[in-house]
Length: 104
Figure 1 (cartoon, rainbow, N blue to C red):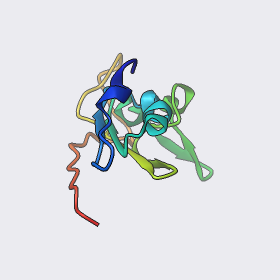
Figure 2 (cartoon, one colour):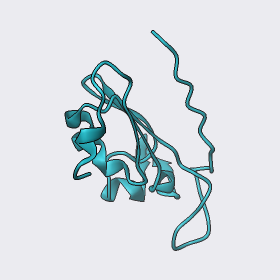
Figure 3 (tube, rainbow, N blue to C red):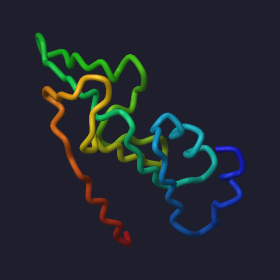
């Protein structure tokens, strides 16, 4: 993300599209209001066991899928439609995300 802070426009909605969601803390601190990412495939295999979400993606990142917030900034992480290593999904179905931006 070196140099991306130069692209932040004060007073505008600043959106960062990033393959990897791990840039979110830095993007939020640099002034990006919204980060849109993927990369994790939602953990690809997700099993609930005794009310615990067993997801291998959590070993690599806290941003596996869904929406996360840090102060006024947000990140939307899509599970996407692909796989990695094992060509299978369990409990983490593929998705194509629609992000609608509305004036508040």
